[in-house]
Image (cartoon, rainbow, N blue to C red; front, side, top):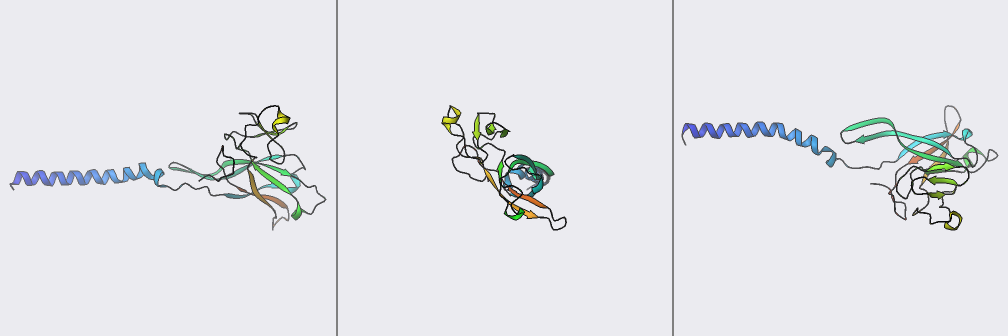
Length: 188
């Protein structure tokens, strides 16, 4: 091996080493979202004071939490909404009060479910209607086939007392579910 061949070989090694030093962090940055595990971590949150809820009148509440969007982390942002329906009145002890909580996401195609005083919950995208219990309104009552594959997605909730103030709250476990399925399946 002569000197010229040796210098070419050393120059190539140095060039490839420099290229790898630059490329490895760049490739890691680009592929980071692909390597990150998707999680449907449920958010446990107090959403409404029990005394502020009226019987049979749904109240929409915002669920806040952190979310990851590709490379950026957003803290304390609205990640979803829920409908809270109180079923028992003030004559029942707070700890025995029945409350139902539903996701505002339509199980048909994921549009935002609204509340209509006359018919209950409705999805404006495809005219799916639901009763206050979350069950789909019967086809005969609507006059057409209700497009929803299942009832509104109910969320786990419980009534808790605040240790400091002594007030009763509705605490919700918020999670998202797959659309278009006949059974409720949590999103991965």
